Length: 300
Image 1: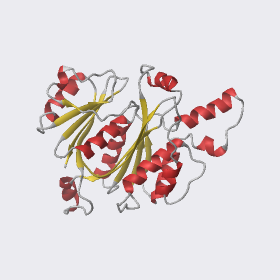
Image 2 (image 1 turned 30 degrees about the vertical axis):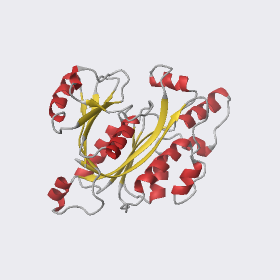
Image 3 (image 1 turned 180 degrees about the vertical axis):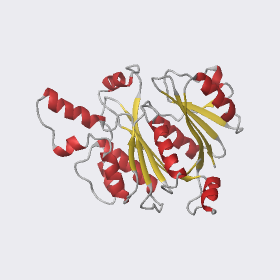
């Protein structure tokens, strides 16, 4: 299990009537140095991670895990248009920033992190993938803390981005950067070290992260976790998998009031932790292979 000890968040709705909110001033205000030649995806990562790290004494070897479906998609689109439409070579920094793990370099540099630095993409289940990787490293003793972020930037025109996402053209879209500083839960830490780790008290505990092959596996999983707490909510980031199915009967649907983007499961979990005490949340993320990626968390 993973104990959440700090949160960092950014969210904004995206539409074609106006450009996305400028981030440079906020990034410069919270970061230790002013970074030049960075794109919006890197700005989103820097902003969310710095907000999560504020007020916390991060060990230099804290593991860094970033999940995203598309990463620096706006910059990538621009580079491809320059190369294949206009026949021009992109600027070196612009080309380098198309690499998904460039953002990890800047986040680690800003927070002086020298440990593991991993980028992972698993479609709409990139949060679950990052959590699973971090949990493996924590349980094996390779790290004592993990900084986990799930980030997706908004793209204009929104109609074209809806087409990329495979959703209706009229779907309201957003962008977000959602971060969690975690450590092993108290019981597991005692078992490994004999003592309770020092630091801030936990805000919530992520008890389970799993990938389920089919609806039968999901039914079995839900039959266990749905009954563990008297106040259990459920959230799905899938627009096609509705929560009125009999699988979810008896569970209250959680509405985080977020527009659609692949990383919004992270935003839902973060908002639930801030909003509720002594409650639990089940999250569902589906993929094209018919699998469901799930988490079960309880707030303090």
